[in-house]
Amino acid sequence: MNEKVALITGPSRGLGEVLARRFWAAGYSLCLIARSELGLNKIVSTLPQNKGQQVISFVCNLDDKAQIAELTVRIRENVSAIDVLINNAAIHGPMGHLSDNDFSLWQRTIQVDLLAPVFLCHSFIPWMQETGGGSIINISGGGATGPRPNFSAYATAKAGLVRFSETLAEETKFYGVRVNCIAPGAMKTALLGEILDSGAAATGEREFALANMVFAEGGASMENVADLALFLASDASKGITGKLISAVWDDWKHWPEHKDDLSSSDVYTLRRIVGRDRGFIWGDK
Ligand SMILES: NC(=O)c1ccc[n+]([C@@H]2O[C@H](COP(=O)([O-])OP(=O)(O)OC[C@H]3O[C@@H](n4cnc5c(N)ncnc54)[C@H](OP(=O)(O)O)[C@@H]3O)[C@@H](O)[C@H]2O)c1
Picture 1 (spheres, rainbow, N blue to C red):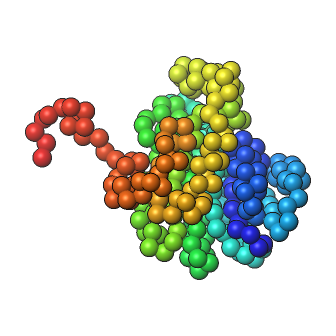
Picture 2 (cartoon, rainbow, N blue to C red):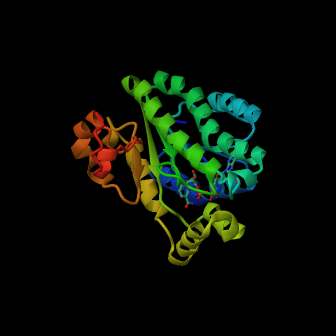
Picture 3 (cartoon, rainbow, N blue to C red):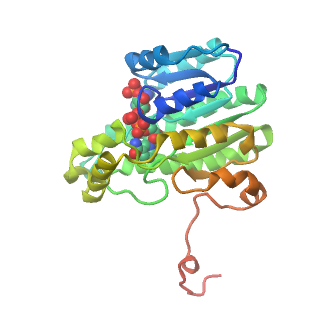
């Protein structure tokens, strides 16, 4: 592979498919990972032929630790470098109150949504270092910045992914590997459709109503998420690391003008809120 390479998990549908098509259109070679061979073939066979770019796909269940370990070896054998790693694949896991959840499904959610991305970072960061650096983009989700009842596994995994990304960003900032998270907003995908299939009794009325609204009105733009991911992959965002960025709400297009403020402050990160942040003056030091 000659061009810059983007590894994207979960490109067989939804946001991952849009990311794969947009990175391809931007000139990246692609390394794609999902469980569905059919889904992978569908995207690979419909990418327009572009000179010099290559696409390689791997069937892998990110729930299976042995398969991921084998996958990382196969990728090192078949790909020249990973310039961009996008941990996009995720599952909602069990819905409803924790005490009603099947605990093995809860654990599976942590494996797919948190431990698999961590494992891919662990495997590929040394390689990124050797090949001149790179950009890691972790897709966050509802529950990362506030409680999300009835989705405790998903919320826990996504909050963990954000804290992991902030921590990793500190560790890697001196050797050219940047790590950021994107909060994409509620999108009309199969993942959100599961909320409608599960019903309000499991998800809660609020989640159910939101999913219904997204399906009726269209939801957040996946193209907008791809614009942000391409920005985070590009040199225009050099120096920006350890941030959780909302594709819907944050004015990231102007962030290149604010790099000093971004790097010298804790804006766009997960932090504890204390009383005085909410106007309560209780004598805290
Ligand atoms: N949709 C939303 O409203 C929303 C909101 C906030 C955040 N997000 C986040 O956005 C990202 C994309 O979500 P989406 O809505 O596009 O989901 P989606 O339509 O359900 O797609 C999920 C992708 O992940 C892959 N995947 C799932 N389990 C896997 C496993 N065990 N091993 C390998 N691949 C697996 C699926 O492919 P296979 O089935 O072929 O494996 C599929 O390509 C996720 O990180 C999600 O948490 C979504």
